[in-house]
Length: 204
Image (cartoon, rainbow, N blue to C red):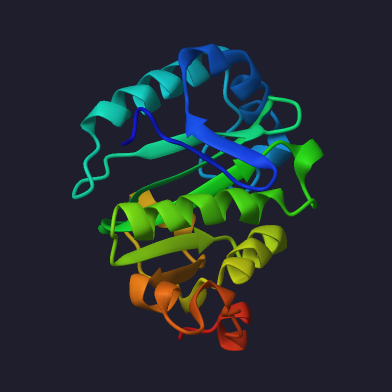
């Protein structure tokens, strides 16, 4: 299910990473703008190699009931080039909840590809893994990522507060979530977030 993962969307192929993705993946993770809102700094080639070792090892460790980390490559269907990543994994400051995450090379921003990739992973999480809920966290200054979550129908629930010192990076982030019932219901993935208090930085 995980090691052989492959789905196609209109413009993308989402597939399991391999060690052959090292050079193009490093080209993405070594860009400051790509890493701007992430807890990690730009990555060296050696660091990306370790990331891929971990990601590919997790494919055999993941189960539907225990997602250790499930990260997939986002491939441009027209060119076959690696253009980003997306995945599901335990939320760092609340590991009992499963987080949706994604990222794209700068050249592919603003083309609607991030929500297309994220929707593929979201659908897999709900329909194949039967997850009861999927969450996401985003820096409120990251307007592009906020728009992605809104397009997916993931709802802004609260502002993250009161974290331990080692998790302080996420303090003030917006916490979004969507249940499987909401995803599959009448409004489903077409629901858009309209939580203005959350946008304004107030506790929900």
